[in-house]
Length: 388
Ligand code: SF4
Image 1 (cartoon, helix red, strand yellow):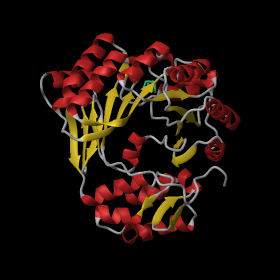
Image 2 (cartoon, rainbow, N blue to C red):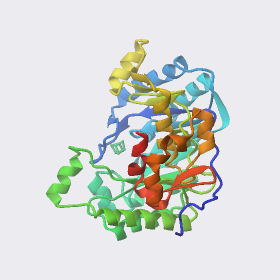
Image 3 (cartoon, rainbow, N blue to C red):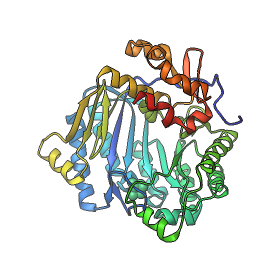
């Protein structure tokens, strides 16, 4: 099928250096579907938060090499450029930051202009990830987003003016009341802005989301599952035709513009985490910081540990998680690499459980690798149940 990854597409390099994730929990308004760790913008709390992050990063760090830094949120672009610069300086104090490190900041279109973007670029950010979600104003209103489609286009153009040559966009699919044709209008809107990378997410409706109530009141429904499958397949085909190759279930990129930070999640290599609610992972250890922003600030100010939960995975659980993440990649995973890393033959361990997925055309085993087929990507959760 046109648009799907070729069998022998070049493999993405497995990252060796660590990543750093920095959480920024502030938002100008709360979107109707949002279930992230965030709260409304509070200027005084924002200042205290940055004042807490700056000493926390070197305090908990080890002198390791870091080649990706990712500001996620929330809305990191609500920080001012000098605040982003302070946090990045703290990273340079704490780690050996690679000269070519990928430094990403998530941004909402309504929070930026050329001056702010130029400031972020000067501070050391070299990749932007815009939360666009849709190129249709009505859909954006339904989601409770503060920007319209025109502002999204302007923000992307402003990013180019500010000399960002690595720009990603997020789009959300399967929105309330969205038809296949409307979704494809957004996909075409994305292609017209010529991003370097894009992430396509399926809207997840968590219980009690305000959007659930709105949908009931306004009688908006989501299209049937079969239409959602068409939306996904047609979007991937159009994006591939526009030079954006699918490299992960939800992600496409121009060659060389795959998200180096997110590849650490999918390759299950390590990353450190800072900020409230941030999760870290290293050598089988997983930890999570206290979610509440004020509690995080108070703990760091008091010299206390902001970690709320930590656990060490046993080897079996580590293998299961690594397989769960690795199979998300279009190239799949190398059985030999997993044998070297975990001392287990994946096919011996899971082959019998995976055989029905192979028979159903959802999974392929070839040339020492296993990978999901395009149909398998649509049903990935079913295939990957065997690793849980
Ligand atoms: S901008 Fe992002 S983090 Fe903030 S409320 Fe909206 S979806 Fe949630």
